[in-house]
Amino acid sequence: MSWTWRKSGNLTFLTIPKWQAEGINIGFSTRVGGVSRVPYDTLNLGLHVGDNPAAVLENRKRWLDQWGVSWSESVVGEQVHGANVLWVDKKNGGQGVRELRTVIPAVDGFVTQDDIGLMEFFADCVPLFFYHPDLKAVGIAHAGWKGTAQKIGQRVLELFEEVGGRTEDAWVAIGPSIGPCCYLVDEPVVNQFREQFAETPFLQSQGNGQYLLDLWEANRILLLEKGVCSKNIDVAAICTADNPEWFFSHRRDGARTGRMAGWINLYKAKS
Ligand SMILES: [Zn+2]
Image 1 (cartoon, protein in one colour):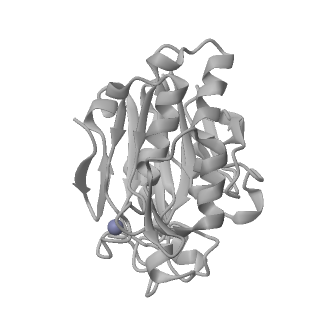
Image 2 (image 1 turned 90 degrees about the vertical axis):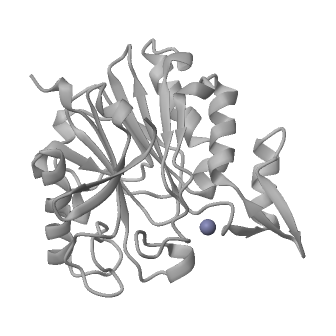
């Protein structure tokens, strides 16, 4: 089964049963089940958005508890809308999880073969999740329009290839983000995509130099271009801007809003 809603205790989130059955914890949080106040209500997991840090840490604890891991068994990076992806392992455990100053700098994607949880934060940007069955490796990437135009998803697959993982065997999941229904962009953004993609069927002109951008399809196309099999791509196709009861949205709410978390770890790596 592809992306599925799940309720567990206070939390409601999205997961993929097929991945869970392979020994992978995969999840995308909603805003439900936390302690933050307006406009971060309630499960804001971002420490960098102006929310009360004590509330964010309580929220993060609830999220980590869901996956059965401690503070030191996860890692967080400073997301900068780039295409830098890094191998991490247990030694990185705890970086950025309880405070901003220890985040791994300037990185928008992680891969690991170790039993460490990879966590990134989102409020419209596309969360990409990766699993390589032969390598027993997982990955995560933060792909807003800039990361998507820079093809960060392909960069993750290149790191797998460098250690012998064939791209045609990789699994990829595209989580909730702002959808083609709501994401209006202008010419400077469009031009970046025209430079990087042979064709841009994911852009729909609305006149006046405005376009609707389908980041799900742009990412799906760049994954297929790299050699991922269509059957191995799970697209949630859930719009963050259209669902204020479930999700924060930067485009809808402005800068003062919360963040959802994307999560992935190999729970079967634990001995
Ligand atoms: Zn929408």
